[in-house]
Image (cartoon, rainbow, N blue to C red; front, side, top):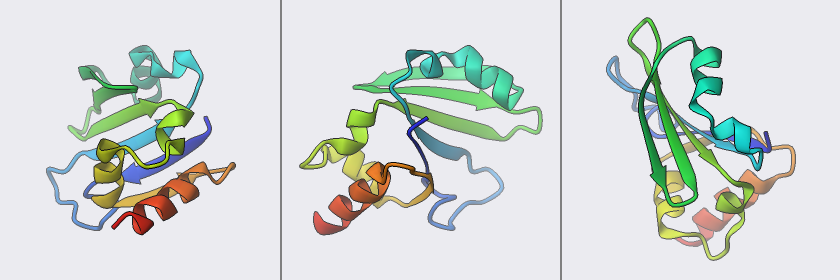
Length: 116
């Protein structure tokens, strides 16, 4: 994985008991977009899958009822400048970078701040 960023209500400290957890995973490894990888890792069934342009959404429900939305995106998702409107919206709505060894997400975060 090339990066992981928490987005949405948990990232902006607005989560409540019914909130899902939204995570963007940056990777150019095709197997990481396979829903089975996430069902095994999160120990729950896939309840939804969608494609949003280059981003593959996999939604998993844990036994506790917690839903985790994983958006598996290619590295190019974070590296396009100017920032794509959909990417800007996701980042603007709140984000916390969890793993960013190449500073790609840090650059995206800065580009989104500059685009305000």
